[in-house]
Length: 508
Image 1 (tube, rainbow, N blue to C red):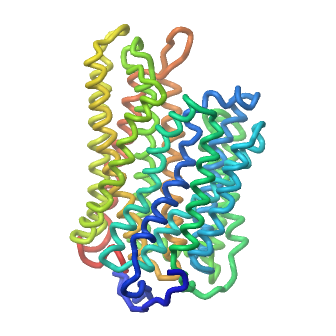
Image 2: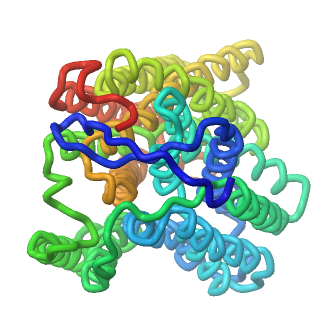
């Protein structure tokens, strides 16, 4: 399949412009391509939740304090935020398969480095190298759009896009099981081995496609400006609770981030061949999709933070459910399965009604899922502290799992519809970069959500056996914010131009 000659055809991108799309020759099997990219996306996204079960143990493992080990999580976020749009642009310039092969190498190296680390510094470096793989998912989505037949592209893109959530959700019980019954280093050895298998699959199964754009040189100044601005902004947001929201460090970081990003935007608009074409991102369809993506990212965070805590808190607390780390992971695993299961359904809705309808539906479904979870927690708030009836605990777990599954279905719809909207509205030589920028907007939403919810849970606390824990009210308020974010995303999606089902096909 490598090196296959592509058929070329002109397709309308829904905005009145024609773009060049390439499809596989008749007879080529698309299954291995879809499977390769979906598995690659899941492997890369596993890195997001690998360390969640061992967060509290990291200071002891590396003989340092919690503020230092927190960088093990933060660095992956920072590097991924920068790498995603940069990888997309390089893929547009030099070829998507080539960049996929290049990007997975540091992920493998980072996994091995984490597995052998005995101190916090190499562990942080390894996690940063893993973060470089974040851009592979939007890059893979763009490659699917380029090479798959029109009738197969929608469901494949939805599955690949949903792999970001699938890997994170499925990684939680896997990591919990390994952490409870084996050495935590096995997590990174296994991830590295899986990434090697993914590299071989990319090499053998993905077709080579010549870049659709002309190589006018890479925008190094724009890359540096984006990196500095994002690092300053995301650091201030993610570390604000630790540093103090009124501290000079936090305020200074926010100020530097805003100023540098504004200067970066001015520079990118003036440049003929920028890292990110902001004129393209200003198109109504792209702009509103990215705004909706911020709120989708904001909404996604709460469910993965709140429900695991409630499930693991002791029953004697009144609203805890007393599950083990592994038990919590197993109850949360259906969320990822739901994302995978609805990817094809979302693609069919997008084909018949248009991806803007799918995105609006996604927001409504996520909001309903949060509503279910908030109502269940509200009933727990009335339960007295002390022992609880086992059947009550079980039914509560079932209902919370149901709420998480509904949220997962909504996220699956959103993940498939957002890249469809983006790629229907940008030139062929900017699809990977534009899709990477869309992924970045989701990350920004999740980062802001983490900061906001962190403040809420820090303020709404109670004492339990000498420990400070969040109140049930803090959890409900956080779920309410997730519900509100999803509802706003739905409203923004409905404002995206274009009649449902017209001018917004899944593939252009």
